[in-house]
Amino acid sequence: MRYDETEIIVRFQEVDEWGIAWHGHYIGWFEVGRMELLRKFDLLPRQFSAMGYIAPVVNLKCDFKEPALSGDHLLIRTSIVKPDKAALTFCFEIYRKEDQKLLARGETTQVLMTTDGKLLYYIPNEIKDKIDTMIQYLNQP
Amino acid sequence: MRVEEIINDRDALNLFLKELIIRTLKLEGITPQDIEDDAPLFKEGLGLDSLDALELVVALEKNFKITIPDEHVGKEAFASINALVNYVQRESKNTLNL
Image (cartoon, rainbow over all chains, first blue to last red; front, side, top):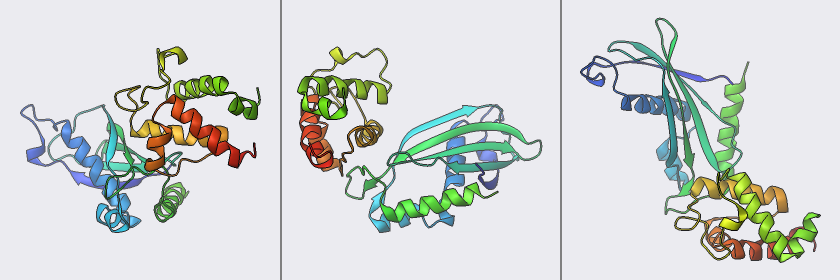
C-alpha cells in the first residue's frame, strides 16, 4: 500500500540529555501523520464529533530502529489497514530524509464510539465511505 | 455437525462458542473447560476488551449470519456463554429459518 507523507523537523526541545529524540515524541509524530491524512478526507476529530462519534486509541505499537537527532528532517509515512471490524488501524513509518534510514515503525488502533460513550459494532456508512475513499487514494499506482 | 444441528443442540453450541472465542481471540492457555457458563466474558470474567467484542461480532456474523447491532444488545449477548447461546439460538431462528 502507498502512504501519505508528511515532513517535520526535530526541534531542540524534543531531544533528551543524550541528544536523541525522546521516545514519546515518536507517538506525537505518528499523530502529525495521521492528522494530515484525516484532514484530506474530512475525518479530523472535530468532524468526527460533528457526526456524533469519537475514535479513542485502544492500542499502540512502536518499534524504534535508529535515533532521530535535533534538526533532522523526518518523513512520516502514514497508511490505513482496510478495516475487517469496526476499528481503524493506522500504520506509520518514520524515515530520516537525508539518508532515508528507517527510524521507527508503528501502528495505532482506534475503536469508534458515540459521543455519549457507546461502542460501535459497525462502522457507520458516513465514515465507511470516507475510509473507502482514503484506501482508494492510498492504493493509487 | 452442520451449523443448524449445532444451533439446535445446546451443549454442542456451548462448546462451539467457547472454541470460537478461544480461536478468534487467540486465547493462549485457555481451554473450553476453563470458561464458566455463567461468568461474564468481559472485564472481570475472561477479561475481554472492546477490540475483542468487535472481533466476536464479526466471527458470529461469519459463522451464524447473525448480527449484534450495537453495544446495548452486545451487553445482553456477551453477558456470559449461557447468554450467548440463548442469543445465537434466538437470532438464528430468523436468519437460518430454523
